[in-house]
Image (cartoon, rainbow, N blue to C red; front, top):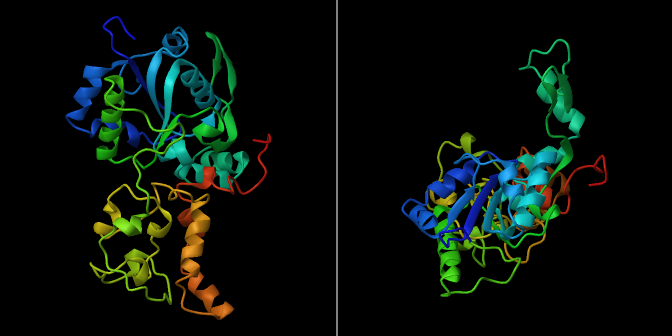
Length: 331
């Protein structure tokens, strides 16, 4: 608690795009409840706070930390351990922290392949093949940058996590509901769910909350949505040959993408009880492909341009695959 009796709140941004930070601000007036009920002590994107300020705190002094982003470098890993040590409740906030999200697709490449693309790619002028050095001696002293980890890991791969809130980013109404729950707990009006719970998702799939009609038709081909001249506004997108991750994605987003005419891309992660989102989606597709001929099936599947990027866009780092190769240091 602070001197004014408020519990302390923190938020940290690791390997992610920062959209989760914006999503917190998008809860509108509910952000005032955060200010009214918490003392914000560490939120680098919104306030001037230093790591040393957190390091000086007592263990468990922060009541609630929302940690968004995966663990891609040594700095991310250090902060994961630090925030775990200083926080009573550590929440993996958003798809990057819970599943690795799109940065996790880099696990399909080695560190050297990534650096080659970044520093020697066609859009980069680097004739001397200069690469960043983790330690550089300068007149003022040694400059250090964080060491790049061989693979991107989820927060739970590094430290113990109390709760998970998926989404890319989590929906604003879900964030507001979670903050409201925590405030109710602080006021003695509610109890926290069991440790390890995923908060803000439903018990079913996006398909179950999607209003589009499903006729259980068989699929003869897959087509990229931009290649279709017209999309039926009422019919299931998957039945129109558009790859939609709805059957393999947890509900809770109110099926916002399919309602808007865009396929679900899986950002809320696998449904309850499903171990691997990509495997679940492949099973769902196998049940609707209209062919028993191996060659024809192969042709139909060729319509899925990027299988790994489609089935594991958000869950690669937390999937059974985790990476397409043994990591360079056993992680």
